[in-house]
Image 1 (cartoon, rainbow over the protein chains, first blue to last red):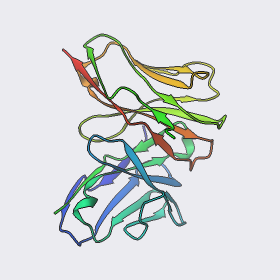
Image 2 (spheres, each protein chain N blue to C red):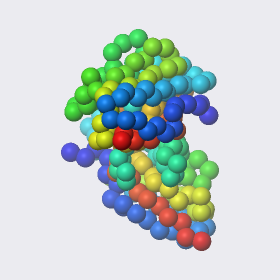
Image 3 (cartoon, rainbow over the protein chains, first blue to last red):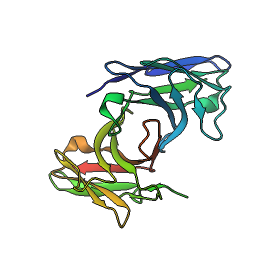
Image 4 (spheres, each protein chain N blue to C red):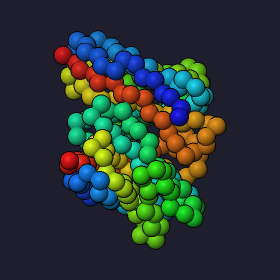
Length: 117
Length: 116
């Protein structure tokens, strides 16, 4: 199946610093990628939809200046958590849709566990 | 209003037996898709099965089958011959519409524990 690679898998950073998370589609073109956040024992909450070559669409309540999303190519989207604080600690996971496969599957990255100390 | 409802926070099943994980959904869009994902403790989301709203037959993928009851708006996942490796969180998700940019809406999940 299609592969989505997400890096890093784990990151610990100091409060006030910024962290960049990459999401790559390795063997397909993804015009649309999605970024989710998941708190322990909870479901995935969509943060934003990332469209190649255009601005991301953020869900209500998600600060666009806090969570910067860049979808620079058909295979790469990045999420930057700016001026991270302990409350930003969470599991972040991206997904990408394979245009060639239509709408039947959305492939997910391995996720990034962010801890802000 | 909840779009996707999973009413079972946790389920137990004996190894080699079948188990059904419930999922109900709410949409007024005639075109939609229903997904099931497995999330082991490692965190990755593993796609299991998909059912389109216009599909005439229930979807099946190996030991996974989707019991799609459109009138009831339910899309239960059936896992046959449970294995220890099936222990994980299971999420039901829905996509409304047929545009590739449409987002997935996830249920709250069901934690399945397979007993040896």
